[in-house]
Image 1 (cartoon, rainbow, N blue to C red):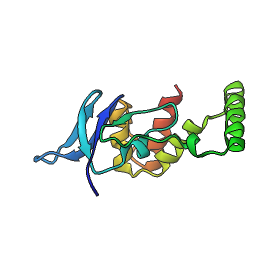
Image 2: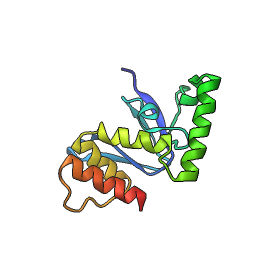
Image 3: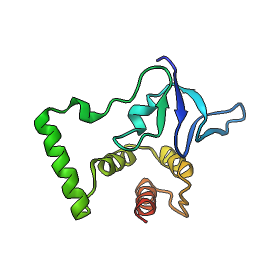
Length: 135
């Protein structure tokens, strides 16, 4: 897979290790190369964390929807805001946390400056992350 070039727009991101085996952490504004499709992994509608600098830009899932699907999504989002129901971005966040390994969750928590306390299992780490995001 070819490396892609990104600019970090928000927060922190850890990827890879240096020659001493320590994680490499990037901060807001840093430009770096990655083997991963970070815009697909982390960006969502209304929450863009990475800017692709290689000409390949994040494509919103809304662009692929039919008119009927788009109308239904708009209504669902309006209802979610009115009733405090989770938006699709929050659903994607939950799905992405569930698909991460313990190590990835710990890196994510570090990037977002979330104190995990004594949480060590995947379930407990996810619980701490979600509770800090809802606070």
